Image 1 (cartoon, rainbow over the protein chains, first blue to last red):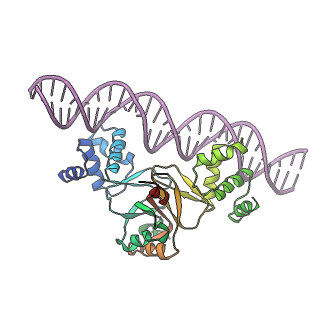
Image 2: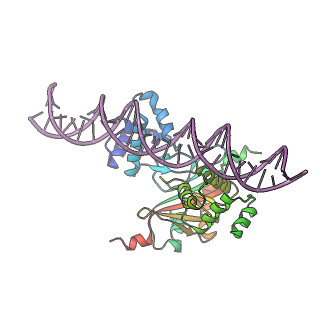
Image 3: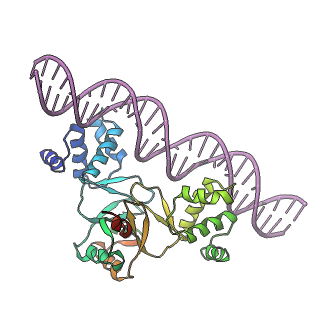
Length: 141
Length: 141
DNA sequence: CTGTTATTTGTACTTATTTCATTTTTTAAT
DNA sequence: ATTAAAAAATGAAATAAGTACAAATAACAG
């Protein structure tokens, strides 16, 4: 709780009840939730919370680089408290969205060193994979 | 026109006027258009064309792997007739979406060989960059 | 031709997200 | 404390992308 508040402050975001609750939720659940999931999870303990506030707050967090957006084909916007560069794997069977660490510089650096990107000013890199996750693969046949 | 038709056939898609027109448009314009852009471009010459047909047709093309979807944060779905693996660069200044070739296997293979992905069955890989494109960078200061 | 199937069309609907005016909460100053 | 001012939250209404569906049209086989 205190950590959450400190984190928000460090990102230049003024703390409020709802902001802390939302950020806290994202820090505890690495499931890349949608707006609706966050709203439904918090609503029982914060009955006055409105969806609009969830939308506004998430947008604010993204603007202050406190969280990341995860955009997957055909899916609603999802959010991720981990702003370090990492890829996502989207399982088409179970729907899970799994974080994939990128071994710093080796994988990513290689990509960005692509000669075709020489004159580009890269601010963000998004990488995502789609397929079948290990646990679905095992329980398959 | 004939090429377009042959291409559709090779993908197992039955040709119709509207399907040819839409695929043709995508093959001639590498701008990664949205549904609306395609509709507005074709409508003058095909006044009876409906948006629904554009939606249906694009979905059909994607299912038959004749085109690719391009999903960018905060953008509507966009479409790309080039189904070869390549990345996209999204310029935040001019809005252009530029194809970035990946030097086969070296860049991409490196990524997918990531130890964290060992037990995943990868069906698709999406890579996109966000930042400022060379021409905007030049005309900047 | 004629009946059958595939495709297209347009309207109505759903649903995610945004807008905005009002209310509530927070902050700072008296 | 009290109050004025600013910031944030709320909820209802608007917007817009995309989908469902039934009717109309076109393509096709016999």
